[in-house]
Length: 310
Length: 310
Image 1 (cartoon, rainbow over the protein chains, first blue to last red):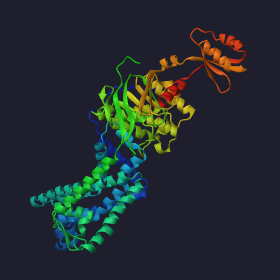
Image 2 (cartoon, chains in turn yellow, green):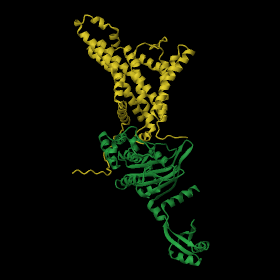
Image 3 (cartoon, rainbow over the protein chains, first blue to last red):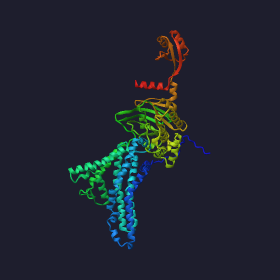
Image 4 (spheres, rainbow over the protein chains, first blue to last red):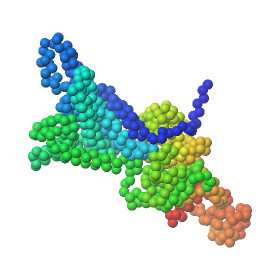
């Protein structure tokens, strides 16, 4: 018979010399967030289908094009099909990558920042978990990095991962064609850079807003309010006052513009004669730099084990 | 006091929250074993623990914990420390088991060890099947047990317990104190038990540190304190007590009047209590009752705190 001693047992093993705090937080945060997304199974499933809908459609079109191209003798209208706007528009290029990331998927990025991002610090503050985290061998920056990692995981899941998969699919379909392969590799690098920079800014902003509240829903109201005020109130008012320069107050403009510059494309912004990718980059870098700095300061000031009320 | 190397060494330690001084000029060398940290609410007990954990900075002075200077490398120091906070604190949405595993991972335990230890310490803390339920569904007693398990999962050498019996019913309190006693006496874990309840400290600790108004009031062994509490005699009288009191004073007996008309007598060394009857006869009063009493540690503590307040 096996007897199990239920008294306290000391442990003489060695602890990891460098505590992988951020990694542990990312792993746990991702697991908890997926459970949260799928708490209502149908809702979670619909969200995933919707987020991956454009990707699946694009993959289908690329596969179809590949099939037509390789069986050209069986399709009399092959040339016409391959020149079709839809087929051309799906084929990975700087313009399609920009449209995919900053038009189609930006909605899902915002949705994920709302559903997952807003509770990341707010709920820890509400349940006094910061005291538990920071009384362990964990530094504040590791905690923040871990929380950023959680958000980055979900942002990447709906942006850079499907975009890279589409590029990979195109590469495998076109075969070894040096020029096109080089183009696609270059595009993949640009996609990663654009997503890292714009997603990083958005993630630290979301964390800053989350750290301002003690409930996810309050943080969500702040987050939605922030975007509504800038896009629906501040921008139109400034457009009236100083026509043609109001987009400088829009963070959405700066994020899209940075994306367009990195991807090397030019896109129309809101039909106001402003062309993303050709406007000066310096103001965008300054605005995004300030936003990142302020957000980081807010997060570091709010993430404390002891809240001092003076 | 213990002759072993001190686990805590405080040299003029001061903690400030803005302009408010929470701890001032604390000097103490605290030996191993179980140490009680006593004082009324707001005395600075929690502030001292947080300062020793490196959660709040020392504004003056210095301190070492297990030989490690506080503030130099808090993350390294915290690997050997377990902390059970006073406030209700939990990792949101996690089950008792998952929260304890997570605490172990954050403390640097490898994954498989953290899993095994989480089960072990939860069973030790008396959490059976409930460990698979979300912490948010727990009663106060269960939450305290999970907090203890989280503090123990990485097998610390020193355990800071901040008001561990808060909110517990008498049975729960006795069980919690039993667990702490076992950790300290049988498993060799140093325990610093902060409480405003002297009975908790008396039951578990070998020495006591009393803090009031942010200052060190007393640091003594419980045994020494118990020995120092003098034996007194409570006498009830029929008749006018003033002449009895005067006669007592002449014979070197300290007679403190009581509300019921009787006296609390402190007899000089070597005096037989039977002589009280002779004193009563001489002052023409009749002894109604005479019973021995010992002043409790609580009385002694109240005296010390009263002197400081005065």
